[in-house]
Length: 86
Image 1 (cartoon, one colour):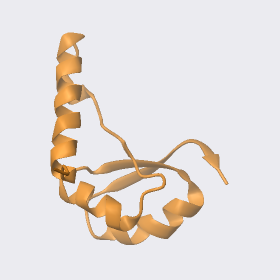
Image 2 (cartoon, one colour; image 1 turned 135 degrees about the vertical axis):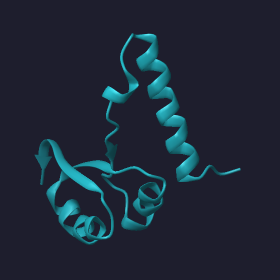
Image 3 (cartoon, one colour; image 1 turned 120 degrees about the horizontal axis):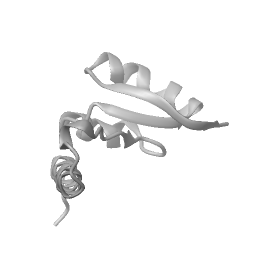
């Protein structure tokens, strides 16, 4: 059975919460930045629909091609992270 984006995101968030509690950290202080590198708009949209709102991208060309329209359609934010690759 294939998991949905919503199920996978819930699993990741549960692991983050569990680990944060284990180390004595407030789970609310942890931000999940989903990496959109190499994923198409079609693949990212279900993750946005599942509630993920913060994404990181390190390839300017990819971000320019897929994010402007997606950001207009939701409260999603993306950030250029790491050293940019060309």
